[in-house]
Image 1 (cartoon, rainbow, N blue to C red):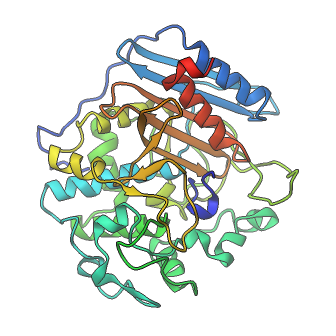
Image 2 (cartoon, rainbow, N blue to C red):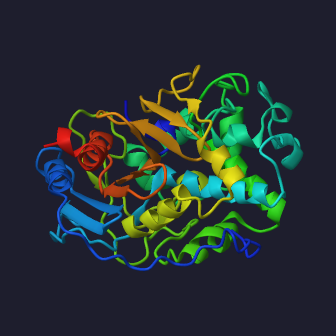
Length: 397
């Protein structure tokens, strides 16, 4: 099973204390090698049909970058290391980090209810916001329906309808309402399963705004983007074009045709993704973020424990859509078992024309970030093969 668009389009403040403030990472020397990873990248294009794919690896020896295919099928321009792309649900790790920093500052707690912060919003149609906690939002155990699975909303983003609606703007409140009013109701009672839902992360970001008095975007910039020096990372809001150098994002527009036509979906308003999947970044910036996050440089120990050390079983999902097998979901991050044994941590995302993966060792000392600029069929399997080529080299030759 892969991520699906219906599973959610996988797709910081100045008050940070000195103990959690991070300075921009210095550039690491490029290390040679990674033949297994390069073979996986080449195969993704030659056999898997990906337009282009990139991967960046960081370990104790330094940083390695590899690519295959093209950024633009019309011009033949090759993939580049500094290209920006839409990261989809990898955004959730950023959002959860901001929430946990607020917990560390005692501005809220993970056991606070949605009703406490957003009174009256999550009520009716089988929902009671007084029984849903912030923790449940972050680990997808709230049972709240994913607005992306709403049939009317989903249809607007498929096929020819996408061209009609590609510049539509949505507010978080509108999207939350779509999820809460869907006739299907909750996936399960709060805390009784796992149901991947972008609605959860919109609610979490709305709580961020209520707790701080600032926008989610401002908190993201002040707490994460600026301290880490993520100069190519930003939240576009309703801005349709991707800033700077970027690959074209090729999409089937989620057609069910067995031989779908490909479309250039690079330019579109992704306000519908926001705190659940709206960020634009690069492999290098994602590497810096996840190295800092996994390495414990963004959160104090207590919040680091909360994020990683009690993940929920993603196979217990009630009426929700199935998710990635062999995974457990923490707070904005998940762990995935490898075929060779062991596991990696991080997050990944799918959105129109882009698959992204950022996974590594639990301590952040060994990390791989990768992206495919196409969203069809084997995107997840392509990124998994690249991941295993790095972390299971003996079995990937």
